Length: 348
Length: 270
Ligand SMILES: Nc1ncnc2c1ncn2[C@@H]1O[C@H](COP(=O)(O)OP(=O)(O)O)[C@@H](O)[C@H]1O
Ligand SMILES: [Mg+2]
Image 1: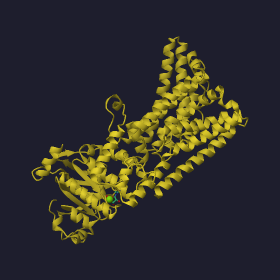
Image 2: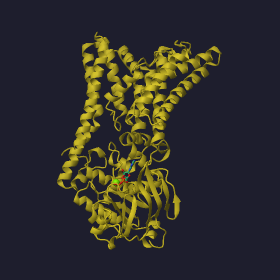
Image 3: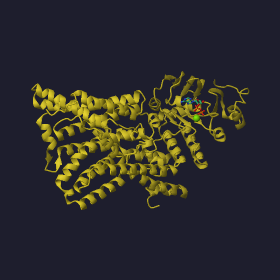
Image 4: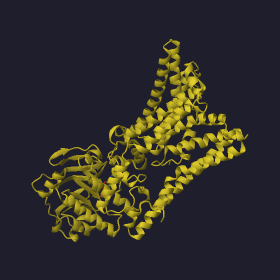
C-alpha cells in the first residue's frame, strides 16, 4: 500500500478499488523498469572488467569503447523510434554504408574538380544525409502505401542498398575525401571526448527529448500501442510513420558520416550487419518489440552493454567472439522479461 | 460556445437537427452492413440505438464519427452537408465517439489518452517545436475527470494497469470532455459494474442537460428505456423502428430487435 501514487485520490475510493490501484502502482513500476535491468547489467559488467583488468578504466579503453558505441547508438536511436511504433528497420546498416559512400563520392568528385574545400565537405555531408533520409522515405512510403510489413520492406531495402554500395564505386573503397574529415574523426576534445562521440551525444539528447517531451513522441507511442485508436484520435498514422522511417534513415546517414570520419574513408563493408547490433541494443534497453514502450536512455545503456563487452573481453584476454554469445543471451533474457511483464499486467 | 450550447438547450425545436443521416448505406463486398438509414438527432436528445449483434449499430456509429466512409448517403450537421474524410474531421466538428473496442492506447497514461490528437503545447517557441505541456494536460484531465465523478486513481497511471471497467470509464470521460456537439456511445457500459453503469447514466443526463445530444448503443434494455427519449431499432442493416421511448415497452423493443415486431412497427421519423 505504501507505493500508491496519489493518496488523496485513493482515499476517495472504496477499499477494493484502492487495493486494485496500489497493485496497479507496483505493476506500474515493473512496466517502467525496462532500463533498470540493463543498467544493472552494465554496472556489473563494468565492475567485473574493472576488477579483472586495471587497464579497463584507462583513457585508451574509454576512447575505444565510446567510439565503437557511436555506430550502434546512432543506428539504435532511429531504431528506437521505429520499434516504438511497432515496426522494425533492418536497413539501417545498409543505409549507413550507402549514404557514407554517396557522401564520400560527392566529396571525391569535387576534390578532383578542385572545388573550394569548404564546399566539398558541406556538399558531401548534405548529400549523405539526403541519401539516407530519402531511403528512409522510400521505406515509409512502401510500408504505408503498399501495406507491406516493415520487416519485408526494410529487408528488401537492406539488400538493395547493399547492392547499391558496391555498384556506386564498382566495389572499391573511397579514400579521397577532405583531410579535415579524418582529422575530426580522430580528434578527442581534451584528450577524452572524441568529436564523433560529442556529435552522437547531441543526437542522443535530441532524440530523448523528441520521444519523451514532444507531441511527435507521444504520437509515436500511441501508434505503437494502438494504431487504429491513434487514427480515431485524429492522428495521420501514415504520415507519421513515413517521418519515423525518414528519421531512422537520417540518423543512419549521420552514423555513416561518423564511421567515414573515424576511418578517413568510405568502405564498402561499412555498416554491414550493424542492424542486428542496433536492434539488440534497443531491445536490451527495454524497448518492446510489440511497440508502444521504450526509451532513448535504455538504448544508450543497451549500446554500451554491447560495446563494453567487446573492449572488456579483449582487455582480459578472452576471445572477443564470446561477446556475441553473451549479447545473444542477454537479448533473449531481455525479451523474456518484457513478455513476463506484459503477462503480469494483462493477467491483472 | 457555451452561449451556443445554452441557446440550443433552451429552444431545441426551433433549431435544425444537430445531425441528419440521409439514406446512408455501407457494404463490405456482398455484405450489406447498412441500407438506406435515415435519422435525425435534435439538440438535448438521447437516442437509443438498438439491434441484434451484426445489425449495423457500430457501422452507423463509425460513419457518423468519420472513422469509416459510407458507400452511399449523406450526413448533415445543422443543415449543412459534411463529408468526413477522417475521425479528425468529425472531432473538429464536435462529434466525439466512445467506441465499442475503446480505442485507448494502453501504453499511455490516462491523461495522454484523454488528450491524444489534441495535445496542449507549451506557449512560445517550445510549443512551436511541439513541446508538450504535460502539467497543463494532467491538471485539466484531473479536473475534468473529477467533474465526471469517474474514479480511476492517479491520472498518471498507464491504461494497461487499469481494469476493464476503469478503461471504459477513461474512454467515456474522454468523450464527455471533448464532445461539444454530439456524443456517440457504442456499448459504453458493457464492461462496467452496476454502480458504474448508474454513474454513466447520470453522466448522460448531465450531457443532455447541456443541450448536447447523445446516441447510445446498448444491450441493456432497462437502461435504454429509462435513459432515452427516442429509440431507433436496426434490423439487418435497416431502420425498422424510430419511436419515442414512452411509446414502447421493453417487450416492444425486444420484439423489434428480434424482427418479430416488424409488422406492428409504426415509422414516426423515416
Ligand atoms: N470491416 C468489416 N468487414 C466486413 N464486414 C463487416 C466489417 N465491419 C462490420 N461488418 C459486418 O457488418 C455487419 C454489421 O456489423 P456491426 O455494425 O459491427 O454490427 P453491431 O454493432 O450492430 O453488432 C455485420 O454483419 C458485420 O459482420
Ligand atoms: Mg457493435
